[in-house]
Image 1 (spheres, rainbow, N blue to C red):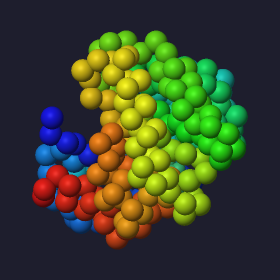
Image 2 (image 1 turned 30 degrees about the vertical axis):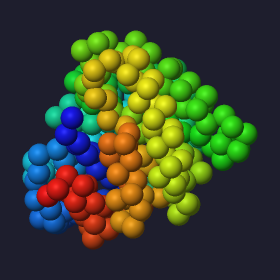
Image 3 (image 1 turned 45 degrees about the horizontal axis):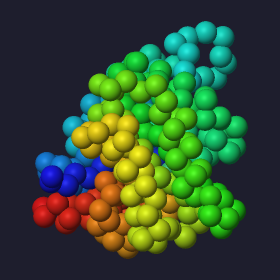
Image 4 (image 1 turned 180 degrees about the vertical axis):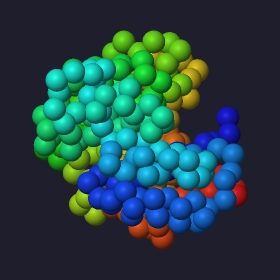
Length: 251
Ligand code: 13P
């Protein structure tokens, strides 16, 4: 099967609405659309409206959402509110889990609500350094998948993306080696093949992805894209990462 790549930028709590709009316009000019390549950015909620309809080359996602449709949930954003503003939604990012105490159950409720609203969830999973050092990486990641993806209906699997982000690699400048990443991606791919046979669910790697390590990461058999934090905040570095995907696609 021909390879496809999904290159995504998680902007976290960076960029105003104006900065986001300008970035998307510049980014779209920096690469040519090619079959098999999907590029997406995940701006803050407050910038989603300003990046609408700018360029079909740049897909848009939100960084989080709540699972209820509406109600007395001060400060929260519902799946329905994202309709028309976001195609994708990041769920269970380790910063949500660790700083805002989101549980696997919360993440699962969000994921099912996102699918129900026609949004495409990107489920983030990953282990801490102590978990890796004590040999619990696969156990943790597979448990997060098992809980996070519980109850996904057969027809919804094509809309699901998984992102493996080892917590010790996020924002540290210390990426997983391509071999370390592939080992976990291989296990995720086998798990997914058991749950959704024949459906090519994309699995992104995230954690200190930079222009100089993305070619090798994207070359791994079971890595179908990258979820980039810091290096996605700058057009030059993000487009250099996109270029690695284009190179591997032969474009
Ligand atoms: P960095 O690329 O800054 O390590 O962030 C990764 C990340 O958390 C993407 O969601």
